[in-house]
Image (tube, rainbow, N blue to C red):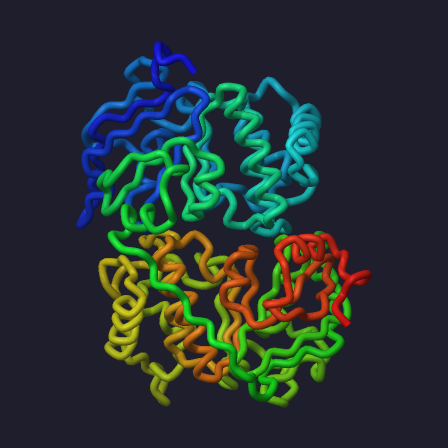
Length: 506
């Protein structure tokens, strides 16, 4: 890299204000050609806003931006893409009813026909090891598969600057390794990468520079390879996250039992569940690892009561069969559930946080059918304070929160309900180091209080940190369980391909 080259991107004193909050305060940032540059910070630190300014979907109030040495005012994402800036958002922007190929086609210039785009997707996918079927409708994809579509769409624009917002939060360790091969290849070819992630080991592996934001301001610029997790955490949150205490303890009675659960998929691109056997006892955390799209979603729907087609006896709560009962009855029996889709399934976007409490708090409804709004506000305020949710208060609509803060609120709401059985899907997806440590700590506290906890996560590190036992899900089948202290990352990674029969523990 020649120092005589102009910076690929240079931001000077960028400021962006919203009512009640300054998202970015005089932020300066420089990315060189062929450099992977990390942006670190807590939820609500202003990272996503800054990326949207670069991508032209948000206009700054003050400050300047230069690209390849020229001052630019990017008015919209089309202009950004024409300059060679491409972005993969944390919240995917795909049309559910269209196919993968049609979604990708929308983001490209119209000189290609759909067949050519399909061909290019297949070529890019195999070049970079991103497995995807161009003909599938997007509504049938798992979160991890949508992520792949977004990355392929960005790569097809041949970007000079690629912005990635939490790109690995839904990928397996093997898929992350593959993605990093892709990203390192791009960097070698002279592409610059702006990489937002909470995973410090990834930043260290990929990036040679790092800008840290706290409350919208730059608190440091460093080479992450020369920093420790502790020093990066201090720059980010002003402190180190507390260490988790995981005491060994003997679990109690089985509170959630699944016996021989088989279900034919409801949509053509779903996964058939095949003879699933699972037991979660009081006072233990059981984890399910696996690449998304292998039946985790179908299993969670069956366990939560959203899908009631299971044989009545195949799912039991505290010894009582519940296969045919709905979510309301299961909640009444003490089962609480955090789904992976935060907006739309975990929360109603336009409703306030207080009213979103109603989804799980039927006791705020009087016998005559009136809602006790004050009780809801108090409960919402309690969750906001206990889980450090950055929101304007109980009246704030769910959709006004950043992804990580909404996740804190939803997880907090379910934990606050004192469940007997708690199921969580991707509990710390997109939340920062401090919040992830807090959520994991709260999960362990629930376990120690005798709750049975089932965690579906694609973050192996997280599962190894909080689980007592692990299963792997592949192609709608569930592996035998293995004690966490006997499992290795490599072995779990192999099991994710469905290879557990030959070396399952006896």
